[in-house]
Image (cartoon, rainbow, N blue to C red):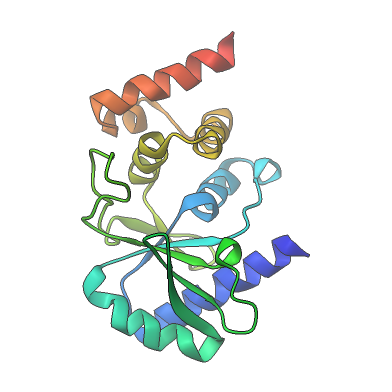
Length: 182
């Protein structure tokens, strides 16, 4: 049931942003799932929220677009998000990442621009694979490492994708690849 809720939320948000003409890209676990599904739909991992990359200048348009689908803006611990107006749980909301800004102060690389995306077969605007991989390697939490492992296991990360990652983050990719072979 939770997986269906996230899928419905993802579709509703994408449709609202598409209808409003907002330039966005799905990132995070849903982006990983979309990419992994292109290679092995049985290897898709569920996620409990929706992560969306936008330009800060579009935040007002995003707020206007998401309000009719029952989402209201909130900020929790410095994270911009939209939560269900009837059940405002930040864990299951729509988390916003701003293009060109550092997601965390310790990060080296800013979030990419939403124009660096591709359309999935079902019309979702998904961040390009090299940018997604860079974001996951930079965050490097347990779930991010698991997502990178999923991308490796599904054969998505070839030499071209590997070379598109900054050198310092490529070492993290090599670490995950090595852990898999031990």
